[in-house]
Structures are given as structure tokens and as C-alpha cells.
Image 1 (cartoon, rainbow, N blue to C red):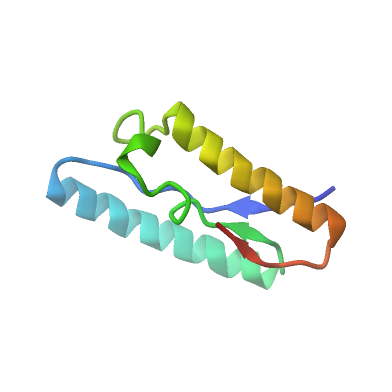
Image 2 (image 1 turned 90 degrees about the vertical axis):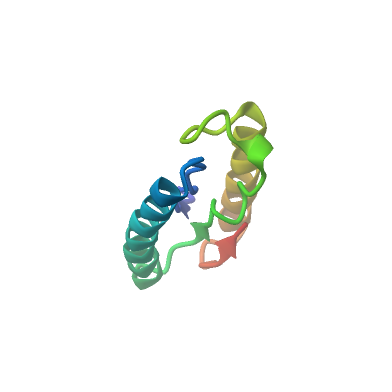
Length: 93
């Protein structure tokens, strides 16, 4: 089966201190994830590059319908590309 791995999308906290803490934790998580994905030679969807607008978020931690649509379109596109060429280990965004 075609497989892609996605990073976590960033939070949108209004409090700058909370946002910085969330982004730091996310960076550590995503860094470990990316390293494992590349070691396994799997394709990656970077949701931090997909969900970039305020309208992509329903609240601080959840995506809106628009954000979900954007994310799912990129994931589906990545899955389609990998299904056609299973040797692809690209980053999709």
C-alpha cells in the first residue's frame, strides 16, 4: 500500500509565550519524526508548510474545514504520486 507520513501542523496560540513553548515542543517532535522518515526512505507531507493561514484553524489546536481540506488534498496528492512511483521519498507540501 502507498504510505506517506505527515508532520504535525503548528498551534496558533494567542499568548506569545505559550506559542513559543508549543513551537519548541513541536520542533523537537517533528525533527525526530523527519529523521526516522528519511531513515526509512518514506515520503513526507510537511503540514507546517500547508496550514499557514489563520483561516486554516478553527481554534488554537484544531484545523478548520478549510485547513482540513488543504491538508487532505496534499496528502491525497502525495499518496497518488507514491502509488505511481513507490520509490519516491519526497517532501510534499
